[in-house]
Image (cartoon, rainbow, N blue to C red; front, top):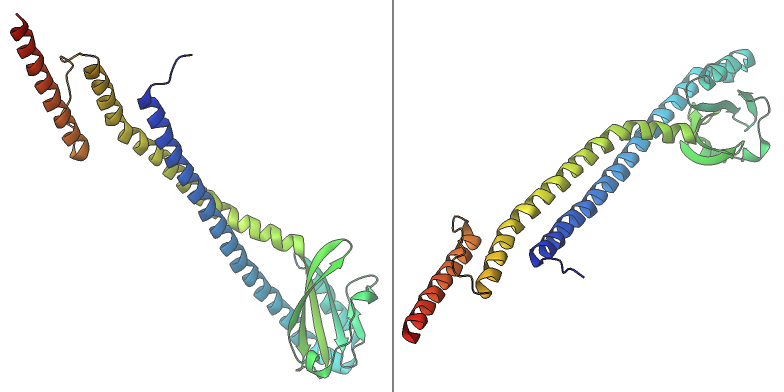
Length: 247
């Protein structure tokens, strides 16, 4: 079986190391950017949804006090029609639902609220029709008149995050790919003089003292090439003396 040249094997090892490290770093960078961006965007979406629930609370406050069911129904229907919103409903100060946008509200999702809980803004995750829903609860008139509830579909939130992050991840991926290509180029450039000097040293070891050695290389490779050239010249002189002495 033909043996792979040492220079080629060294090139493949260095190239593999450069590309492997670049890939690992790229995956880590993309993962960090995705997770950090995902958390930041989710926080912004939660703030926006909480603001919508606050608007519903402000809009329905007077109608809850007047027990105006028609106006309350109109408001919860209006908010429920917003993109990504699963439902909206209003509970009065006694905890009873006075208006909601669902045909049949699931009773298992209703939980009794203490006076302190009615005065606090909160968020919870529940399941509605087999889908995740993020529900935000906001007090109406500091909880004295009741609470406003707004639920958004979980898959809508995830889709919005994905759409926002896709261009960023694409840009980071392109930068990482460029880094991998540059790493491969540098690996080939570094190993080229090593391969050249290895081939020259192999020819000298086989007795070919006429092989030219390029000494235009820089830094350590240039020093190595000059040392190899001095060794070749010394061996050539020594061989000439031996040949003259033998005659």
